[in-house]
Image 1 (cartoon, rainbow, N blue to C red):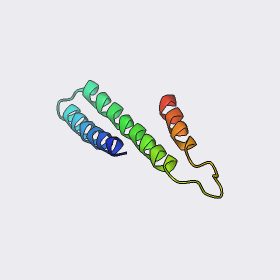
Image 2: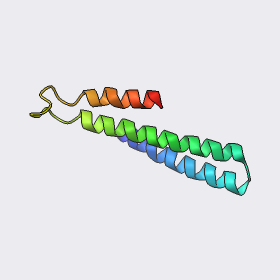
Image 3: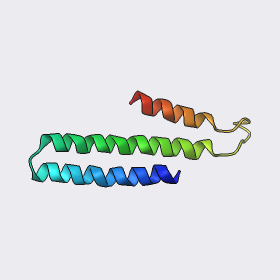
Amino acid sequence: MIAAGVGMAANVVLAIVKIVTGLVGNSYALIADGIESTTDVVSSLVVWTGLKISSLPADEDHPYGHGKAESIAGMIVAGS
């Protein structure tokens, strides 16, 4: 989970730097790449949330645990 957080923080910094640099340098390609890095942040957030939920112990509503959340997060990221 730490790796997902580090990756998400790195993508936030990259997105900001690319978008600002693209705006200053009037580069549409760099702005588009910054927006793409922003979507990486969203994907990382989905993965991190899925890992966090899947690590929860079993309860009354989920007697076999929450492990499927990891698979659902993977499907969401693969579909985006």
